[in-house]
Image 1 (tube, rainbow, N blue to C red):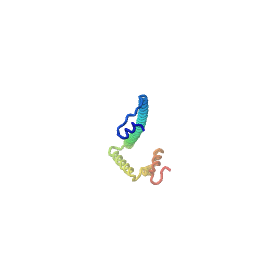
Image 2 (image 1 turned 120 degrees about the horizontal axis):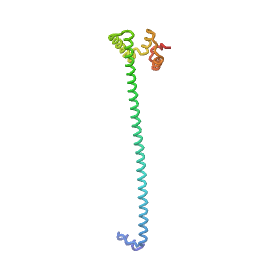
Image 3 (image 1 turned 180 degrees about the vertical axis):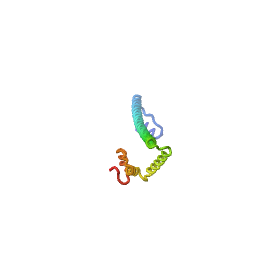
Image 4 (image 1 turned 135 degrees about the vertical axis):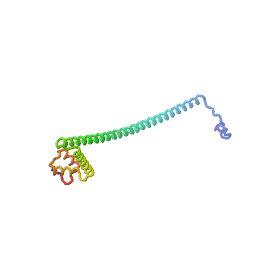
Length: 172
């Protein structure tokens, strides 16, 4: 062992190890280069993780946004469909009521009191049919049996589709 190493061992103070300036510069350069490589690699890893996180966040955001848009579109469509269906049904009810009442007045001379009696009775029938006692199919059967009035094929198909005939189809 050299005397400098022995001196450090016994005194606890670092001894001076002679090194050439070229060797120190070379070691410093190697240290700087390795430090630069480590920092560059670390920076690249951080940037990659940031980009991956950013892309994942964007994907999640776009997915969430698409889901919200689809739900809103579906809700809007359903609301529009229901509104359109209700409006169409209301229009058909108004049109049928007005034309039937006018036909009763013009064809048979029904005055206001008789027309209101027809409207009240019609409303009773609607209320009963809505409760299913009797069904609209039963009313169609009565209309056929008592008055010999046949519904159109389209109307009969609707009644068949929803099974609204109680005991057999009078149109078989």
